[in-house]
Amino acid sequence: MIVMTRIKAFCWPLCAVLILAFPITAASAASSQSWDFSVLLDGDKIGYHRFELTDFGGERRVRSEAKFDVRVLFINAFRYRHENTEVWSDGCLSKIDARTQANGKKFAVSGTRVQGEFVVDDGSQMNALSDCVMTFAYWDPEFLQQPKLLNSQSGEYLDVEVESLGTKPITVRGQEMTASAYRLTAKKMQLTLWYSTDNEWLALESVAKGGRIIRYELT
Image 1: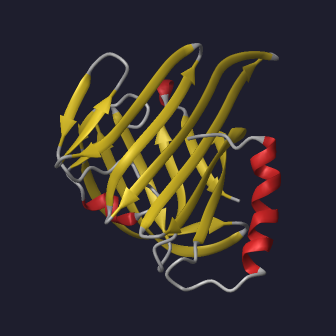
Image 2 (image 1 turned 90 degrees about the horizontal axis):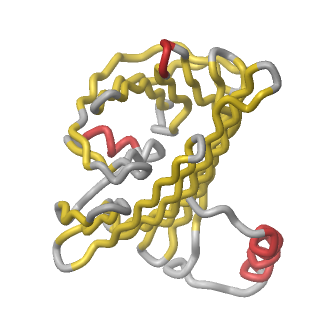
C-alpha cells in the first residue's frame, strides 16, 4: 500500500485531463475505481482505509493505505499504518509490496510471480507458493472462493473458511439496502463482509482484542 506523494497526487488529475485530450484506443484505455472507508472502533471513528484500483493493458494495480489511531485519555494507545501495492494478472497476484507499522512493530512483505510459483519474502524467510495466489482482496468477491489467502501484513499463507450468511439489511451512506453477507475465518481472524447485488464491497466488521468491534463503513 504505497502512499502517493504530493507531486503524484497533483499530477494524476492533470495527466488524466491530458490523456482525455488525445484520441486513444480501447485497448490502451485505463479504467479505475476506488473505495474510501471510515474505520470505527465500537462506533467511534479511529481512521480510514482507502483502496484504489486501476485496470490497464491487461493488468490490475491495487494501491491501499490505512491509518488508525486509538486514543485513551488523549494518549495515543494504538497506532497503525499500512501501505500496499499489488499487481494482478488473469485473476492471480503477480507482485506485492507491503509495509506495516503496528505500535512501533514493523512488517515488510514483498513477492513476485516467477516460473510457475509465487515467491514471497516476509522479512525473515522466503517461501514459494502456488502459481495463482490471492490476498484478502475484499474488493473482488472472487477471493471468497479461495481455500487459502496471503496475508499482506504478515506474509502468512492462511487456510480460510467462508460461510454465506444470506441477505441482510445494511445502511450505506445513509441509505438502507439489502446486501449479501459472508463470514470469513482464518487463523484467529473472523470477518463479516457485505456486498451489493452487483458485487460492490460495502462494509467489513471484525472482532478485535477484548471483544471490541472494528467496522469499515463506505464513505
